[in-house]
Amino acid sequence: MKNGRHKKFPDNFVNKIVCGDCLKTMRQMPDKCVDLVVTSPPYNLKNSTGNGMSANTKSGKWAGNPLQNGYSHYNDNIPADEYAEWQHNCLREMFRLLKDDGAIFYNHKWRVQNGIIQDRKDIIRDLPVRQIIIWRRKGGINFNPGYFLPTYEVIYMIPKPEFKLAPKANAFGDVWEFTQEMNNEHPAPFPVALIDRIISSTTAQTILDPFSGSGTTAITALGLKRNFIGIELSPDYCKNSEARIERNKKQSELLKFKTLSLFQDTE
Image (cartoon, rainbow, N blue to C red; front, side, top):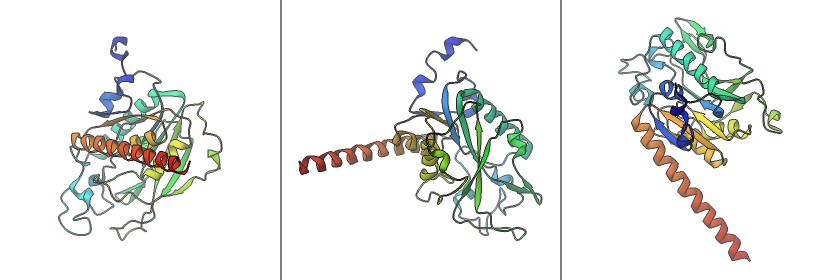
């Protein structure tokens, strides 16, 4: 790819949601252009044989669940080998985009397929995983009598060789307990507190989320005075996340104004 394609990229995308295919978009980006990647892809739930939800579930515990209707512009029902290949290719691109002191924090879920657990080696493969963080979700529901209720997901830390945590961040343990996000139109949103833990534990200035969804990574990055690049396939989610970011900015400005007024009144 010619360098001319890269002259304004990603600078003209900083603090914006890019609406498009994440793999195609990342392949247009130059090497070593972001400090951190924080993301959680669709889990291919409708292809699962172990959780009780199929592509045509009309009744039972899954009926009425937001994920039963699927994602906007994505059906979450890809053959397992194709899904693993896609996700591995996405991770390889994320890794290429990292600076030498950057890292990927990749949230996924161990799944049961045909009675056997998948520990995501089909996706991670040759990537240099340094640590697995357990995200305990404080709840959930189980549709399968063959195993106990799953209450956690995993976050893979996949760093470049020079990656280090921010000062004192290494005091956190590797089991994090955060409640799932409830007041969000997206069917599977990230908790703000979880993203805050990740970003604030690094010195990263530009954070990429290639599965941006409802824009939680973007909002958290801005709140921590960092920059973001969000990529999202669904025009619906792009529109919703942009509106959410603007609401958050207005709330932050209002809070600053109230704080300033408070200090002025006490002088």
